[in-house]
Amino acid sequence: LSWTHAGDALDEPSAVSERGSSVSGAGTTDDHRSSRMRAIARVKARPPKFLTAVRRLLREAPSLCPTYSANPLLMDVCEPCDEDTRELARRWARDATALSDWKSLPPQLDVTHPEGGGVPRARGARKREQLRNVFLFVAPLLRRKPTAKVVDFGCGGGHQTLPLAYHFPDATFVLVDAKARSLEVAERRAAAAGLRNVRCVLGFIEDFDEDFDVGVALHACGGASDAAMDKCVEVNAAYVVAPCCVGKIALAATAAANARETGGGDNAKSDAIDNRAVDDAGGGTAAAAPYPRSALAASVITAVAYVSIAQAADFGGEGYDACGPGPYVDSSEEDEDDERDASGFLASIGEDAAVAGDDADHVTGSIGGGAIAPTEALERRAETNLTPGLAAYLRAKAEKRERRKNRAPRSDPSLFAERETQRRACKAVVEADRNASAAERGYETWQVLMEPPGCTPKNDVLVGIPSTDPDCAAEFGAALRRRGTRPAEAFFRSLLDEE
Image 1 (tube, rainbow, N blue to C red):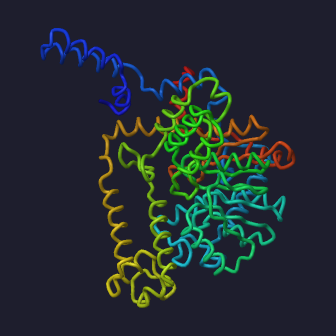
Image 2: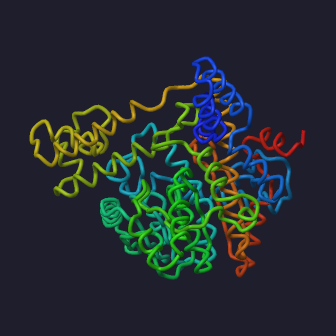
Image 3: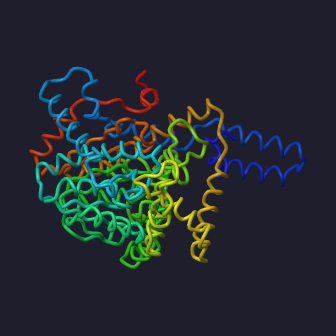
């Protein structure tokens, strides 16, 4: 079956009932086969569940159709606009570019340096672009309030906030993550760079209970992005969130449904949270988050329909699209996690890449005459001093690499192109619903694509400013006034019968 109908076929009641009646009736093989084929044909003839859900959602609630603002980094190539808007956008872009001048930062804060993030240089350039887009929207908030308290939810190694902590010494930065090893890396980097305005908190996003001014989340998986946005809204803080894969919200939606079925009491919610898994960004899953996020969407489609949209929008396991690699597949996050884990392992045994690779100055491509990538340092250490712990660690990493090799095969180009368009449209709808939820609670919101869009397949940035800060909202409204290009535009026009 086509991928668009495979899920429906498994749940098609008519297919099951017709097959059952055929077996209990004449019982002939031909009749059975004929009946089964007719049932399958009916299933294949109807649209997939997610497409039906998207069509109903956008036709009955057209305000949820995604609308994108032009990224200020593109202002010089946009259509003509008023000079005030252009100048403000240019100032934002200049500021973001200056903040991401990696040569001016301590090496421990550079995402590509072995003493910093350790992301391979080929992919590190794309990671740097992602961070520039985060700086683009967070910096104006810190310019307005230099003493702001910024919380980085699912911080990982602190790539997106440690450089900001360096440039804004009067601000306070709180890094929240559920992975102790990630926080160890962040703390070590902050200490090495001499940062005194950074504090790390180990725990789930939902359990964080402090007031703050700005919330940031870069590629917090599944419900972790929703948990981060909820925390911001709870304390009336601005948010800058670039969500990760969204298919995992099915886990959170299921947990919420189970909690409701058991009465939705404190014990049910506690059990759901206690059973959370730590996601790739260290945020944990938002066990009891309601889906759809906005009340408007919830009035139109069910949680099951919403989950079908989210799953259609997903990239698959570890950021990989189930239909095979395509032009937007980017494994930078995978490699970054590998290097971060390796760096944490080195730290746990009291070494760093420079010590473990003491002959790195003889290695082509080494940096700083002695610093090498953490994974390479571990592999070289294993050649001379293979401890049981190191052997187990490297074995686990080898198994992970083998699982990556066994991913789904590449689909044919035409099918992949259709799948990519549908996936991108569904992702835009999910993000629009997230912003709509905040707007219903008194926020001014914007949805923007990272620039360049190819720096990551998860390139949506959601920005929210509480309406209680009208001056700040006015500045963002002016800078983001220009309408941007909406992904999968033809898909939306077709769906809404605009053609």
